[in-house]
Length: 262
Image (cartoon, rainbow, N blue to C red; front, side, top):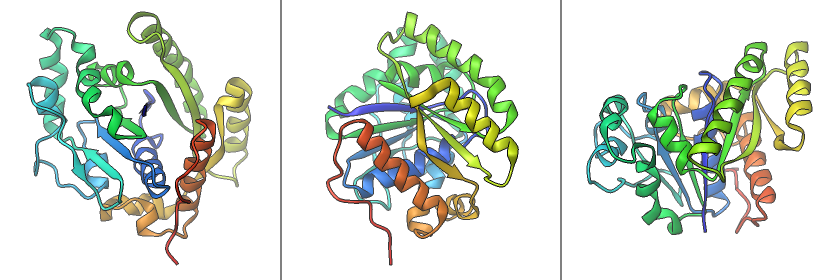
């Protein structure tokens, strides 16, 4: 049985999409079967994996109609994508009047679940019906957290949101873990925030820290995960480490190590 992980944080600019793309690619390169679902109308996950907006059916048609989720192959073996584009913004309005509106993504994923080891859902930086659908469908939530002061301010709101969803819509929802992103080891603030987060979440915080890295920022413009764009970069190495840590926490043994190009 696969694990469904929503990559979520109500605060924008914390590395949700970057984490979804590169964690998924690292898992796939460790021979895990991985599906990523773009639930953000900006479609950055889709373009970051080399797909053009509007070139195929998207998650929007599946959510508001009777269509199945469209699954596309990516440049990475074992990694598939359910794309999105700007039309997904309309789903926030259209879903309001639909029956079981919070359950639609969960029902769409059900026929695909056994085909994958991991399903990662990239969410928008808000708590609308798109994010709600992702959290109801998920087994766990992976929280990317930018190492800055304002990230701490939004953390209480996020935990309150997860608690409400757990009580009303998804009682088995758990926190997969917290990933510290955009970490600058030259700043005292980054280290202080990291200490406070580890003190609050304790073992839920991954040991792997994602550094600030130019290659991570450049890779999406080429439609590639950083492992294909620059496998020797610090960003690529960090996400390979995160993937192995995630597999270890879940008791999964990689079928083969995530390889980087020579």
